[in-house]
Image 1 (cartoon, rainbow, N blue to C red):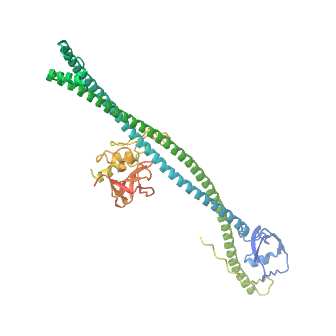
Image 2 (image 1 turned 90 degrees about the vertical axis):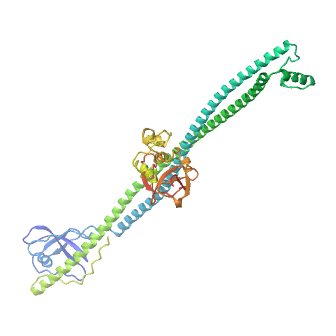
Length: 487
């Protein structure tokens, strides 16, 4: 059926009104003799533009109106199947592009998570190197002090030697003046010939108790001086070697940390680029979907309009037929119509609790790398990378191991390095972990620690830019044992 739209003028009414007349197979319009009005086509659902000459009385009879015209809204736009297909294809293409970008972004985020873990590990290794360096420096200081003590003792031993030598020289000088054959210290230091042996015997007979003790004291002092000198030198050498090793380890750890931080920054930039690109394409997808929704909405509106008009015309045709039957054959328009097609369907639209309480009291406190001690949050320290970029050294807060130091302050003094904290207590399998145990993440090197709260929850100081928080236990890279300090 074709709907024709006419702009017409009633005999005694205003012009410019709009009326709809169905014209199609099985329809006929009969007008009586008399003046005809020219109806000009104003548009139609099929885009047809044509003029039709009908009698104003016939139109009035068909529409069930008299005198004045009746305004009927025009049909909504009806997009073509090609337009719908093109819009759907554009939306599908954008959806595929979003899917590809989402996959790339997931890979980038996974890589970024790996790099973040690596940075955490490197930063904890730097913590370890710092702790070890401090210990080595203390050992070197102790060794230097021992060297100083040994030097004092060696000086005292040397004085004893000189005293013993003076006494012996005095004795030798006296014996020589008396005509004794003892004239050289070699007589009592060793005997290699019978003559020397006789001289030694004479010496031993001549030397009294005090002189003999002086001789033995001199020999003992020499031995002690030599031993103390050797021990002090060895201790000092070992301490210096350890100090050098610790300094080298600190340098290597700082370099590894800087490399890891640079890689993380590069990956973070790449992830941001992908996020921006995905956001842009998602906007395009939304626009394409909106276009498709609009076209499909227009099609649905058109089909609803068409169905409504068909129902209206059925009613009007029935009314016109009744009017024609009641007026007999008196020259009014007789209209008959076939049964209309069915309307299309609409579219479908001291104890554990003390430890935990101490940790929980710090919820929301800022993360600061290197921050935190037994008394509470402290200023962070510089790391030359991520932490510095977040200004951790200017913030008062905790890092992961610093929070554990504070939580367990009343139980045990913990070192500021999660790797040492892992071995600071009894280790139990994760399947047996209890409220108040420490959880660690590695493997290949401890890089994070948190306090288990039970029910799959933990409290942690997560990373630069974050705050102390409660979070679900993460089982990726978790160490196989929890560390228990209480119970």
